[in-house]
Length: 409
Image (cartoon, rainbow, N blue to C red; front, side, top):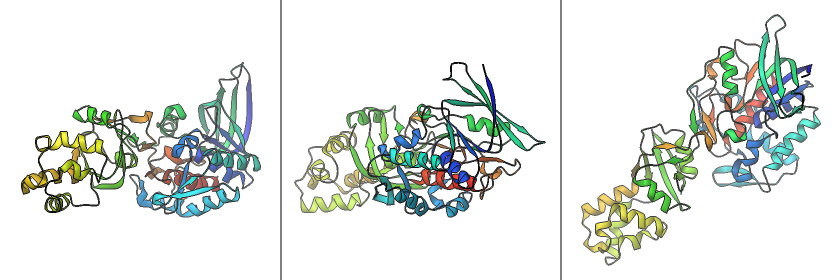
């Protein structure tokens, strides 16, 4: 077993979006930078994002697009590095991109383009990157105001132990989401080592699971999508919902999952552009012989209508609208505009795109990402208690927080 000691101006733990960008920013200031990545590949989460197309930012980023116990914390970093700043970088590499609904930007070809951009920038500015390497221990030398990072490369035959020394340590280790892509709690453990508090953690931007009657309904509708408005705990999103063999997914569900807590109901408006009562009442007058399912087939898939009929008006399935009473119409209309469901749980960190909560940002400088009472120690990206909505916001937080830290090492 061999030992080596190396010294760097900046060491970054984690080669994800935030980590790589902080390294590039610091290296542009002529800092000697090392990035340590535990997996075999840099940017694994980038590669799978946006269905492989990487929703790398959003044209309109606002602090309201983020969840944190300190709602003001993200403002400084987001104003220091804007979406247009990153778009300009993407354009400088000639990477084709599209703007899709809700101002989201995606690569035309592949998320690999963004990873390659970051790796090219690292190479251009002489950033050292080592993979398959675990940071096993971090120690702070108060006298020299420096950090030592001990690592083990499990892929080397002699299990090489290396110690790296630095005056600036950036923690960009991500969070608990999707452990198969490198998610872990190492950053939280490191924060606690330096007496930093970590807020409560839970999965966010994650599908719902049902164990009641909805389980079978969702299974039968697996693959069906529909545009809805979904609400929970005072938050509302209007997006598509997707039925799966386990429950509900799709953009609308992922968004609201970040506000849902166990035991809560969600309210789904299946006809978000219409007052269902008025709509059905008018249909009764114009097409009195029509069946309700035949009428609703114009607004949603036949499969979804069939399930709703079985659930909500099976006794009236063959009853023409002319024979529906005002009270009966009101009852069904209320269900269509306000379908209350109670998920049993979410799919958890296994498929969650983000982890809600993290290192308490009250202990971090919002301008530099440096720990207030621990010089030279920085936390950036998802490890912090800052979580964006779906739509490119989490990537913009990665670029912005990484930029702020890299600029101040």
